Image 1 (cartoon, rainbow, N blue to C red):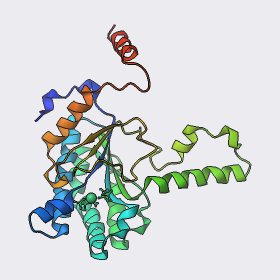
Image 2 (image 1 turned 90 degrees about the vertical axis):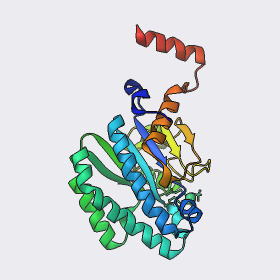
Image 3 (image 1 turned 180 degrees about the vertical axis):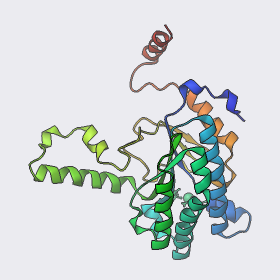
Length: 254
Ligand code: IPE
Ligand code: IPE
Ligand code: MG
């Protein structure tokens, strides 16, 4: 189990993306309703937000509801919507004190009206936060997001504002919901599944993947420290050789 002082503050991930998975199985193991797992998952999120602030990571994106999660039973969908909105509302004061700014990616317009209203309140009241940005992916699907980006570019081409041959990778990135954030460099998925589930596909081209069997409601500060320490022990080569990377590291120290 890692501790805070094992983390090298000079080599932090800029942006951690989290797939908070395993709430349902956590509840089932205890003979509880799935919704009890989601409630406990909210407690885990509270802990992790504090850990992020203590460590000093600037961006964290959490997957709260995917475009595919609409296929779950209606009671579960409704319970999740309300839990997300009211959970954030209950954290509003803490977020303001921590200097956390809340933002969303995905299409939040499908949230029930009242939940959307409180969500927008928290977005507005935390908008001055300077310490870190917490991005909630809600009704989010990466393919949907990329499709919307491509559509926006195609409209510019159709109007003659842009030529197809001038389209760059940056144009695609600039039209994604994540346009204002650096790409995640670390992905953490709890709950034991080792898949991406339509999350930040474009943005995670070079993210380090960290999978843990721990169910999200059981995920602690020490567990996120472990993930960051492991991230810091990996050699990120971006297509180069290990020798090249080591040479670059040496030069940086000179
Ligand atoms: C993740 O936990 C939370 C959401 C998808 C909202 P799950 O609800 O997927 O939990 P499992 O995977 O069934 O255990
Ligand atoms: C991914 O978890 C979405 C969220 C955590 C919100 P799922 O539990 O929906 O993913 P799959 O269906 O197992 O891939
Ligand atoms: Mg799941």
